[in-house]
Length: 240
Image (cartoon, rainbow, N blue to C red; front, side, top):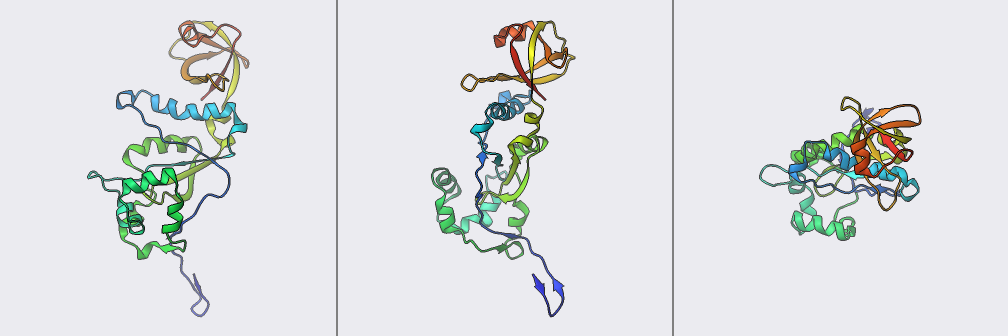
């Protein structure tokens, strides 16, 4: 805002209902058994989506968007919902969230479209706007490492941050290369790589210790080759 008479400019942070208008591919939420966490499974599961997409670029939009779960405190309260979003709906958070997965048109009908200046709202709204859930911080970090950045939007219900990236700019996709397989003994001091096939229907992805022999060949351990059904001369995709 600018006052010509006072020659003074004042800026405000505001929330305004917006919808992404350009075509995009949205990543869904991943759930992992707690017993499978901490051994790289979450990273593999997350990145496997991108590896699959790299094989089928024409099936996905050029823009990839992901919503991160918003902050919830130890008592189960979502402050952004409690202090802001709940005022627009005669629903509890669970019902509003479930309804949004079925048909989110009600959001545009209930939430005003004009800007809502943060300074005029309860302090908690600004504090928790764009703050991820504690259990989502690792997912946020992994996405950031792949080039995903905040697009300035947050979820209208829980205030979780929204990230986006061009599909072609996702790092694990940019680092993709195809090699011919050689089979032998590979030591665990070789680098771990993401390995995956080209199949649309029978896709698999894993992490392997591989030794790069040349620009077109890599050595894979016999045990891994057997588990993956690979034989010498087969093609394999690798990324890191």
